Image (cartoon, rainbow, N blue to C red; front, side):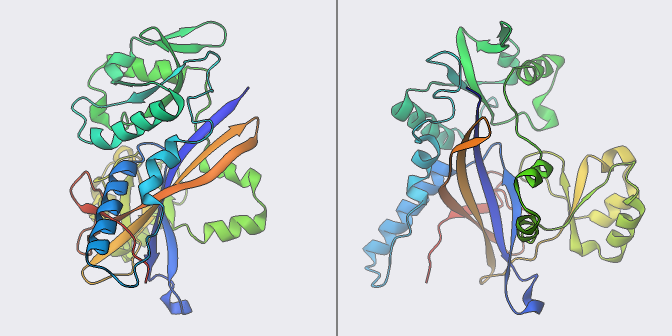
Amino acid sequence: MQEIPNVSMASWLVTTASLQTGGLGVLQVELNTISASFAFMSSIVANLHDSSLNATKMRFYRRITGPSGTPRGIAGKPRAPGAAVGPHEGACTIWQATPNETNSVDQRWLEYTLWETHRVKVLCWSLHERAMAELHGIQRELWIDGAEVAVAYFRSAYTPTDYPSEFEWTGHKTVERWDKKGAASAAQLRRFMTEAESVVLEKSFTGLYGLEQTSPDLPRIKVLVETNPEGFVLKPQREGGGNNLDEVADAIKTWTPAELQAYILMDRIWPQEQPATNSELGVFGVALFDHGKAVFNEHAGHFLRTKLSSTNEGGVAAGFAVLSSPFLV
């Protein structure tokens, strides 16, 4: 059986970009397929807000379900990722963790839910430890510490500092050579959509521009930035919050071509402001595919991240934002 699991988190902002057309717009900030954090912590925050509202006896308050069930929504499917994707019963899931992980409380709850629901064991290994993993047989099964691995989930390994030596690269390459399916590129989604569906979907995308040295559009992009530097932000070609660069004009002028192509240029999203703050809604989704057929593909909860309007970054762990919960009126 060829099974491909997926856990993702799409972040959205209500934006004023389309006010000139007579209404608000909604733009996707990112689609997170690795390190989708705060599923558990958001449920705690939602429960806290629920208790506070009940304590004040809000007359018209109606609880919005979703956040409190997020951990079980992600890990509690009839066949969770890792529960039956390996050729042998009892295969485990390994999480790529960093030494002295600061977000372990959020991650542990998902680990416990996987075990309680499916008896799927989670091993948290660093890249250094993963270098001891081995590939077995013609099926290239991945084994580590005497256990077969069904799913490898990268909680880290997307920043240069995660690779202090060649030993860490060895661990990463071992997983890449493993005979499992990786995430497809976004462009491949077009194969599964009609042209009309693509047009509707792309309305939620903001502009993205590659800065590769070989790009014929690079001179035109540089002119755009010089003309309107506040309309863009530079984002690194990797995962992780707290790395956006807003001094775009200076970077375009002074960086080497090699430095520039490590980033992508993105149209700045101008969110609708509440008094002094704006919020970003993250929607979790879980899916499992078997030979191209969706076994399930469902919503699995959501969380809300709120920050000061004066802050350009949005990371919670990086200290720029806080977890919140939606209150519909």
